[in-house]
Image (cartoon, rainbow, N blue to C red; front, side, top):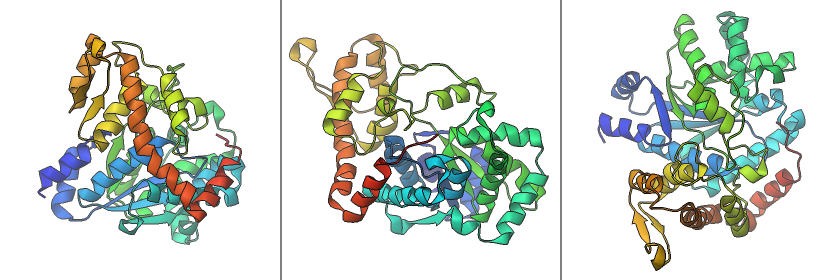
Length: 363
């Protein structure tokens, strides 16, 4: 596989931006197996964007020749008061996350799973955290706090000020060449690119992926970023703390169908349409075609081989929201079923799931 083919893999949906593509090209020209990483705060039951969307992008990175590291950011979740700020509960959720990745088809033998609680045992890590903080103004740290999924007025504890510097330190501690995270983590990655060279380190490439919308109609848009588009995406993203707006990997066939049937999907509307997002970012990445079954009086069955044609038909009214929802329900059940069944059949996975589902989920 040549350099351009590897770049095209990394650029595929759900990738939304690369900072910068030219730097990525130079990196691939000099390193056969650059290190990429993604980080996760263990908190609550796994939604499909965690199990499916992130797994799709991770596989792209592996196929492009990257060595991938998955960071279970348990200390970050502790600082962010996930699972009530209980570090032991957060650890259990992290173990559950590993089972979700296995069930989603991620070959754990091909990735390196790292716990933040192991990284923090090294004094050199904390020395780097301080170095990053010394290169960063308080104003800049405050601006970066939105990476925690919180607005500034929600920040109540001084411990939370450590978070951005820790995330930047993670990048260099893991020897990351490519930061492959969601658009909501953009500010931390940009900070890493800025402070790295001033610390005698490198400037990592940032690959940011799209964040899947929640199923409900978008409500108020909060100011998470100076870029309105990014603020809108963060405000509308699927949230596991709002169950009715989110598909979980444990949802039954009936729950999947019911949630999708009640999802926001206005006719002839593409913008902020979560059902179309499922089609673009998940279904067409997992399947080579998408069959929509319809009564003959409504035109009969139609099979799509690319998203753009489906979007065009939806915009024109040739494709009705109800027919689209029915087909999406069938495919999402097909994709979620193997993950759900893993937790039904595997004893360890089932015990972890039973623990997590009894816990109160805190933002």
